[in-house]
Length: 169
Image (cartoon, rainbow, N blue to C red; front, side, top):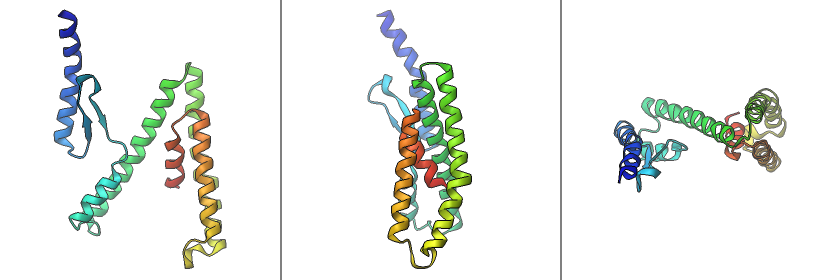
């Protein structure tokens, strides 16, 4: 009986926190089928936000632009923190965790400074800015996307982090 009371009290705080955040931010999803499975998920809610703004006809207004910008920022930060925290938790030692973190930083800088310039050059060279994307350009984009996903999965970070990094550039 005492163990049951202690376990219920230890899960009371996360449940109340999730309920309070749910009231403050109504688009945060919570799962509370059991007190021990109460969790907050702010990850990838951008499509829901777009649908709501479209239904309210606010997508092309100044409010819609600000809300979409904040939503993109929220998804980028949330995805990055989720991927890195999963990598740090799954690492066997602190040296492995540091290696994964530094590899992700170097990978992101490589994407921002090298791959972005090559992609912009490819867009201009194939004429994809004038007539829409060519088949060759789309093939290169998909191959680069898969390479980013493969690399981050090999490093030990969530594969969604590679996809997110490529689409941010």
